[in-house]
Amino acid sequence: MASYTDAPDEGRGRRDLSMAAFFFLCSVVVFYLPGGVQERIAAGLRSSVLRPFIVTQELLSRARLRAEDAAELQAQLDSMAARIVSQAPLVADHRRLHELLDLHERAPLSFVPASVIRPGTAGSESMLLLDVGSAAGVSPGDPVIMRDGRVGLVGVIREVRQGTSLGIDWSHPDFRASAMSADGEIYGMVEPRRGIFREEDRLILDGTPFSETLPVGTVVTTSGLGGVYPRGIPIGTVQGLAEAEAGWRKAYWVRPVVETGSVTHVLVLLDDDVTEDLMDLFREEEGS
Amino acid sequence: MSRRVLLGVLVPGLVILHFLLHLGLGLGRVAPDLLTMALLLAAREVGMGPAGALGFFFGLLEDAFSMLAFGANTLALTLVGILGSRTRDLLVGDSLLFLFLYLAGGKLLRDLLYWVAAGEGVREPFLNAVLVEGTLSAAYVAALGLVLFLPFGGREALR
Image 1 (cartoon, chains in turn purple, green):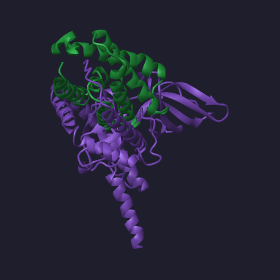
Image 2 (cartoon, one colour):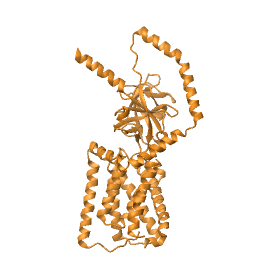
Image 3 (cartoon, one colour):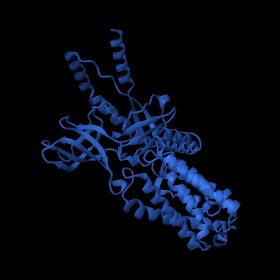
Image 4 (tube, one colour):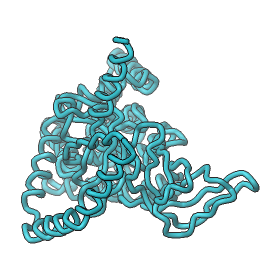
């Protein structure tokens, strides 16, 4: 530790100083680089020097999944089967109503399961690194939901590579989702609010009409407006009134369904069908 | 401890261990900041230039997962490397207390610089990020630094 080696001679000292100034300047430049260039640098490091560590977490994640209690999985399967059976009459009614009203069947959502890799480094707190990428059909803007236990919105995909993708969870400052009360009566916009400690981070449902009141415990889901998140994904439950602007709007605290720290396995909802439908429409219009 | 052992074994070992704990095992904040410790130890052995270069490279590695404030870690660690190297001209000490204070001070400075660079939209309140968590993690890193030095000859390693 002491390294109290001989003091550098004058020439070496000057060279040292210039080199230090150069790297300080480089660090300032890196800080102010355009987002796209920064992302290319980050992606390059992730796929080279840091790749072995990412692979280690992927392997551990898979091993953890394999070690899950088979009895618990069986119980989940049984309860899911029971739910499907109990909903069979509803499906039949739904189909009959569609026929009566001459409505098109909504395209089913397709999804891919993924394991979440948490970088655990400074500045990566609201990020998700997923082990699926463009090869599995994932594209930027795809919503990420949790499939472990309760179903709820986790976040959204931001960048996609061949075998991996990078997303943000609901605690990221850029996260926004158009939301509504579960009964579809009240609409607003959900965004994160930082707590003093990260554990206190929560969501706020802003922009709801002043004349309407949301009781505590009301479930808030995505509204489907804006086209990023499909309608009906649970986001959280109302905890209480956060702020009210007289005669104009109300904002409510929302306790998220998904605690970001507990997310290990997720589903990425793919928008292939929606994109395909839009492309079909586009082609039809071009043809006519 | 010889310069060769420190730079050739301990510093690369700490860097690999840092990413193994944080990234490989996903321990996050539970794991100590061994990257800063490695940089601070190396900075006492090399000149300002190489220490700045090392800090720059370590910062880039840390920033590879930062969508919130890319470059903040790079800036913070480059400065810590340069200032750490500068301390050998200003402060001379071979006691365990000096090592503890040097590592704790360096880590606290790194957290403070990161907090400043990260920007208002991203960072946590100063009280939490620097005073509470920063102080605790600085003490954690410094205490671990002392423990790590024992196998390398303890107090003698400082000479």
